[in-house]
Image (tube, rainbow, N blue to C red; front, top):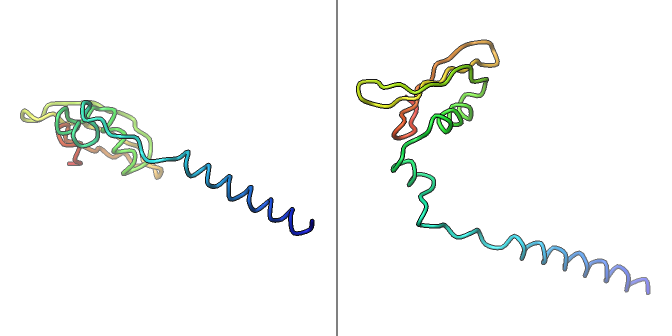
Length: 101
């Protein structure tokens, strides 16, 4: 009886892990009908909200202004951020590629 209870506990733990692994399963299939990630960026460019997200991830701080303007026929997102040190930085993002300028 002393050996039976620990064996049952181990069996339950192993079964629980096996169920958890099968529930996570493979990743969801990618739909080719709706472009996502870089395919969408190449088609539509980067929205102002996406550009703000890119800048936040790169520099942190707080966004104090974000706008889109036309520089010599090229769409550019201009985002001003306030760093944790109190410094204001203006970051430009190419609206077509999403690259920082």
